Length: 172
Image (tube, rainbow, N blue to C red; front, side, top):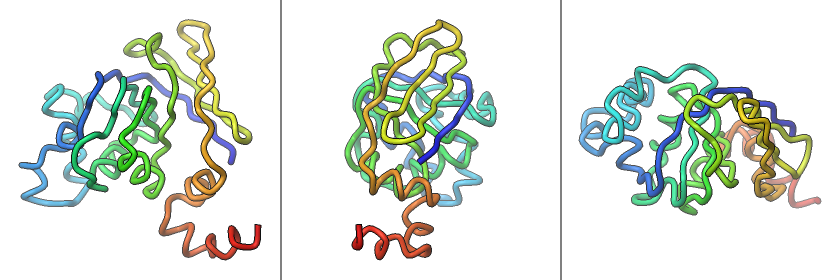
């Protein structure tokens, strides 16, 4: 899987649960991620959603996506124009929901990334590198298992299945 993302770091803290990503009160009205993206992380920072620019990269501490296992948390991040989340660790359910919906979860040391840093996330295979162009450093992220990389490359689990992905992996 080839990855090349170039964006601005948007920092959130540790233990960002799915109800912080999109508040449960907002989900009562609609599950349309194009509407909900306007409320992304509003409980953490009410101005966050309005400040997101296309290609921004979300950067978190440990345990990102903890809490309830709802897919809408990953799809709202994507709808806002954020194609990857970098975190020290992820909730396993959020990690799988991200993969299944085409959102790249990058497990790496995020402690030296600051708000607004220019990041380049790239991979030409199993290794994912995070280059911090602002600070002149490179972080090597945890590799993705091949099947997960294939699902992401297809654009998510639905597209992977439509493209006959399961039959491709069975013969490998």
